Length: 427
Image (cartoon, rainbow, N blue to C red):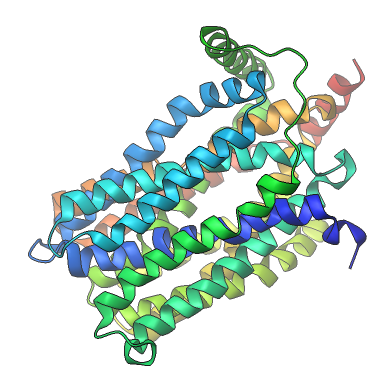
């Protein structure tokens, strides 16, 4: 193992991903959608509960899209990234723990607390991502970033495995029923997230800021920086087209992650089978991401992403017509094979078509899109489910995002983008 993986700052930074990924896996993708439909929304029809979940996810993402650049600018100018990270992480973990207290049938409170927890989770990620410059040299950024992803898959998957065991065999853990096991799982996620955040605050330094700006000045600087970056990206056609394509297809990816369990329960599958399938996806995704890295090397990152999008389209269509649990397991494996790959190859392709001397600025814009893409997808699924009363029809709307994103990506001229990026970097 390279020395960088045992560096105290790098390991401390990556351990935050180990901790907060428990929320992404156990709460966001699995237990909350399942428990919400089966426990908090008991008495509501499946289409209505799906609509509530979709709207909550979309509103949370939309709020973050609006406020993230301003918050980032304030943190940059006031050298307060760790402070903002701590506030959002503590808030998110606290809201997650609060889910334990919500009574059965109280869906309005449950969906509100879930939205607030997700706000804390996603908001903290803005500042977590930005701290990578404090722990990694420029030539090690990709490696350190991948290290964080890897520990996230492993840490989130490990706690999720324990949570699934608690759900499947509650008596082994001293619980009276599944409901109690799930509620305690929310507490476990909050504690896990909090504990593995501590090393970052002890060992990762706050980036040095040349000139500190506070108050209204920081807000103005943030808005001005966002507008300047957006104007420059619009002039670079290859970059602009790729970002629009990325927004669309990554929205489809995020929507499947957030709505898969809800969909499975809506068509009658047992929650334990769905969670086991999701656990399978978690552990397939890590080695598959590495495999897609080799695929991108031989076929090109763009072709690798298009293959992944094609698999997502076929998997989504197949899911709309499945009626057996073993089909859900098969689809979980298929999704796991491409989930990590589409994320890693998107990042490497983007890195090729942007000016190297402005990589931090451009990746800030890219990360904002990636983190907060899931606005339209969940809303599309929720509204369609409510309008048609069919979970299967609502799922098919995601295909629109994949097809539109794939068509735009096909038009991205990578060689032209690389040529222009080199020219801009030399000027």
